[in-house]
Image 1 (tube, one colour):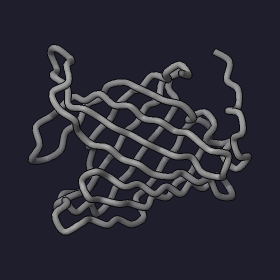
Image 2 (cartoon, rainbow, N blue to C red):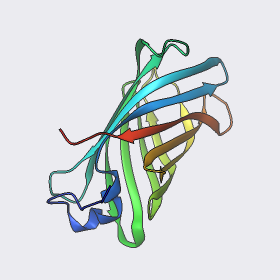
Image 3 (tube, one colour):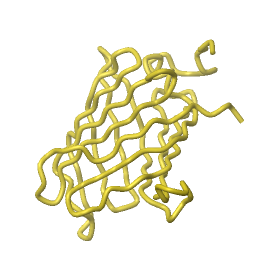
Length: 168
């Protein structure tokens, strides 16, 4: 498949051009106090010509044997901005009452982010640190999220591989 720059993409976003579109796939997760789980996920990156990407992610817990959806899971919305020297600033809000600022770097088709600041509503879990990795691996979007929350140290939480979906 030949890659072309998305039409109207702001030039500051060229380092993220490979992300633009919708991705779907499956992943796994685990964390102390939570049984291991499998999930389906859909992630969309789009733009309106300005110098940021819109981001939307939603997921569903699935039955490991039948792969059928059991119930909705996490969702996030946010904005991704590229700054000089391919520094990446990301702001995310979660359906669970958490908002986060992330800083990182774009290196080709690889993105590494570290949580800069977080906010939790009074009834949300408190996330104190995080690390995210995004990469294009054999044409799929690989994602991994390490988290420190509720007194735990930074450790693996979720990981997934998502296939690019055809344009609608």
